[in-house]
Length: 393
Image (tube, rainbow, N blue to C red; front, side, top):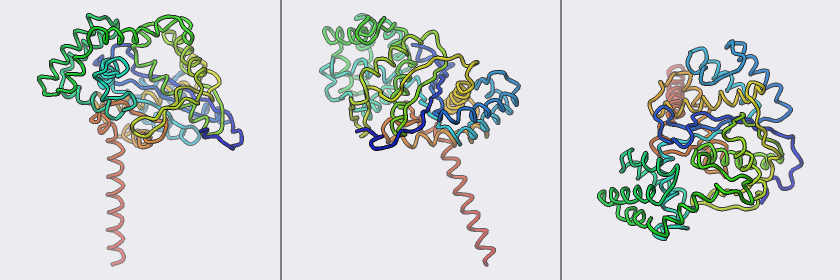
């Protein structure tokens, strides 16, 4: 059902996007443990106002082009990052997805080996069972050493019967020794015709076809940039529809993904917004889009609002780095966290504007600034109440 039913046409909107932490198909680069795609959704009439805020920050930083990564390195930069994000929220909506790469590697194991369409032994784990599949990925991370996932990712980049077969067997044995009989039995089923079907499915997008004009190179389909873009594309489309509006997406120019992103955009446009699937947690996921009219790729130095997307992506990434202990929890960035991480509390809605694909431990640590702010407000409320009693007494 259309969310914009009976609504009058609304002002056009634009989503400006940028990513941070891209390492292609190397999910386990220790220097980049999280991947973020983020940006701002803004009414076209407020773009100039947004640009003025960015220009003010550029002048204060002495930078002709804002770079969120550089702003994070100084106290002044972090303060101005907070001020920009806080000011922008008055007339733009922040959207982002943050993915813990270590968890994504484990989830990719689940998606590859435990797809019931190819592996009959995985019938107990339907593709729509997102909660259970995430729990299985968490369990794999808990049981298996990181070296197993490193070997899997290496085999996944160029899938073969020998490479994927070896890692499926070794994981199955390790799980059996850990008394995880069902998981072990299911992974052991990845042999012969089953494994051939899995590899054929993985390779299917590499050939030119009805939707992909030139096929998708393996380095694209094996990276996190492609699925995270596909997810945000649907999110933006749903937000446009909910507002009774239409618009465009402007993404930071990328030579590596330009053709693939455009192919994905055309594919989802052809699918349309009508095809909907319901997943285990009750949310409805649309296969295609119908309200994003165009995907534009622009250089950040020529588009100030892409620079603002870069700042937002860096701010969200900083929260992820703090969660894994790779970045100090600066007071200013904790405040940024309270502004941005509360968006994850809306994860029960269809295509939430802010999302996190990660282990439960990572998610809990990511919410630290929000919990800290709640505790502070509770303490302040209790203090004011106590002071009031003394005054009345």
